[in-house]
Image (cartoon, helix red, strand yellow):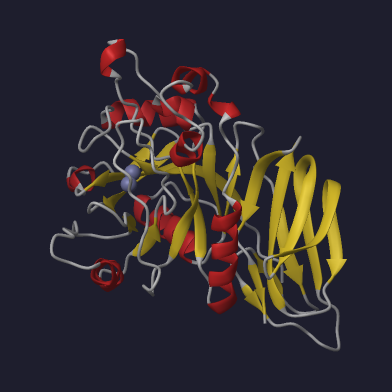
Length: 344
Ligand SMILES: [Zn+2]
Ligand SMILES: [Zn+2]
């Protein structure tokens, strides 16, 4: 039986003026509407104030959800689907991971490789504690931190006006680390914008990386049954899609990736990204991928490139169990990363 999924695109990891972002809810929502986003998840530092004030719900064509970024000096962690804000003071990393799980939430390690920037007024906040367990997943691709990687005081303005020049995709190390983790258990990858839309003081009213601009960059597409325009119902669809890894990330600045498909079929079963499926030794197990436009497609199995092809589709019979995922690039630029299908 083939289940039908809708492909909804959204932005995760957003700061408002309730923490260190500049925008009000109204401004953020208008920007999301303009960018054509189906959903956004606002995640201010230390607070769920927007949720308490009733911000969650449909705002025109965009569903607004609210989570929190747990942000001690390092080891930032995005907490989604939680009801009570979490104060990490006095807790070690594992304790706030556990606290999110206790609330039935979903937790993501964010910007784990934030670069050292001595020349810029930034506090570095890398993830230092990889011994932890029971986190839902990680932010595989952070727009702000990808952009930051080549930036210094001298080229700062160049990259402000040509941000796309800085974007290189998740680093090799980040991909290898994720592939290693998914060998042991499903670890969900999300994309994050980490938008703040800050006003830069020396430049007066000049706002860098406004919301609407970043909402057209890295998006997390969720695959779910259709929305019903009902907050409770649609929220649970989005969160269960995220929990199950029924998502892919794409740099939609290059092209809207909506419509991407990545599946594994056996005689009786079908798996989409994030799913587990049983390998059928005697029968046929087929992997198919199709892209909404011609691209360089790569199938990765257990961290190794299995198949690489230029075009709009791939179909290959699988000969072994493994963790399979799809990457796509457009003219050499990183475009799409799917969550894996776990063929057991
Ligand atoms: Zn952070
Ligand atoms: Zn953040």
